[in-house]
Image (cartoon, rainbow, N blue to C red; front, top):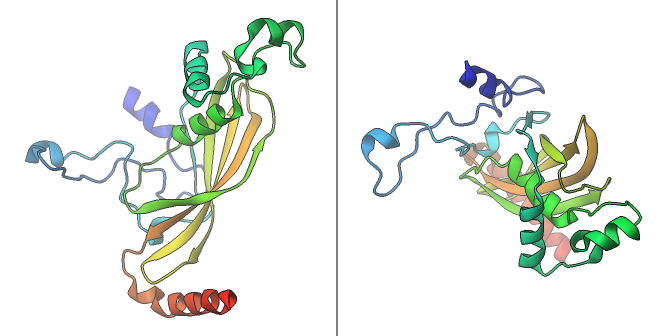
Length: 207
């Protein structure tokens, strides 16, 4: 019963395609017994460029942000601004009356919650990162990820644009970002002509 409920939280809530069917593919690893290699790997996919459907969405599980991990992140990145590290300042003098969770930490958590660990895609960069509402220690967040667009990039990979919308509480949007990533073609042949044209256009733009 638990498996059914858990799996439903990862079902596609967009156009009904298969993006959200995470953990379908067995994959061997060096030193792994054959019987274990035959078991599908949870939260690690073998999607290719062709498998990403525009409009597909997944929703993550929720997680509450604790004080300890927030302070550990602040120490790790040397971000000890009073708004994130000084309780007395945040309460007595701060604009929000409470200590904030660092935006960079919310960004990291938001992406991690919806990460699928796809073996065939690679990070290209991020666009349009916005910290929309404050996040406080003790807040509970979740992420909705959506495939926005895809274009032919070169002879071996296409380029994808994926959005991450991070929410807290009962659906209050706190962060938005778009992730650019490249993904290998399963079969490069159908994209060869478009790839040559795209590369020629890039070369011409460089002058």
